[in-house]
Amino acid sequence: MRTELVSPERAAILVADRGLGIAEEDLLHIFEPYFTTKRTGTGLGLAIAKNIVEALGGVVSARSRLGEGTEIRIDLPTSGPGARG
Image 1: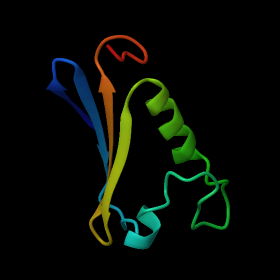
Image 2 (image 1 turned 90 degrees about the vertical axis):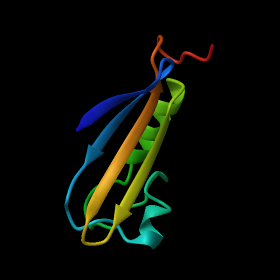
Image 3 (image 1 turned 90 degrees about the horizontal axis):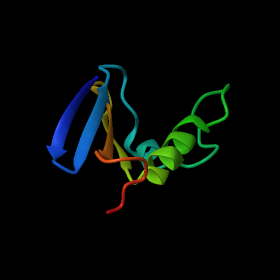
Image 4 (image 1 turned 60 degrees about the vertical axis):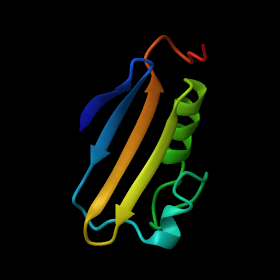
């Protein structure tokens, strides 16, 4: 995990792994409620995380390649909860 100051108004949190990665067709749906490729689990974790980040005025995104891993990026305002100017 690493953080970086994108601008005086925004900061990013990057979380990456070197796991199996996510198939391109699945990557399009990972933030949708109830989407899962596993037998167990609810498929709600990333949907809830996206909702929280957006409520704070941020954006969450994902990049992934099969066999190379996944990176989740959370971009947030630096001043106060849900800062919108």
